[in-house]
Image (cartoon, rainbow, N blue to C red; front, side, top):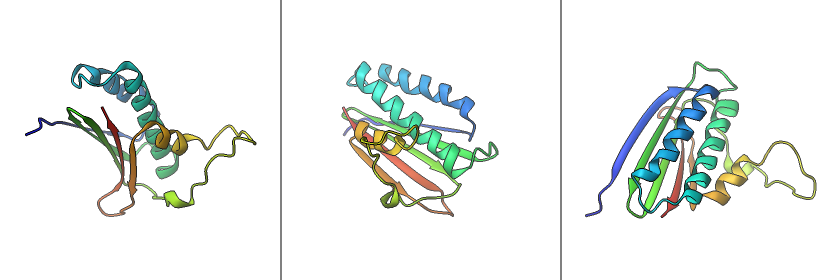
Length: 137
């Protein structure tokens, strides 16, 4: 049977906590031996983008919102679930960026999808909107 470790962190929807989460993601390399520096960097960037989207779009920068970050470390995969109780969205309606016409914003979801192996989003007003990011190690 595969050994799985789980961590859960709750924090306010405030950008000041992004560096704390970034440090946590970086430190995961000590617990997930198959997690290289490059994979760790990519995962950290994807999580940072996802959390920034929650803070900006789900909560409209309202710091009274709460965020749940759940991490599951398995020998061959890392799963990160981000839950919020803010406004939801339809990921099918988010357009791909037009690289022929560069813009300052609008690359977050694209980056998340490119950096992670699986990305899923489930909106739910009662139990919370959940983004699940999976990286195979």
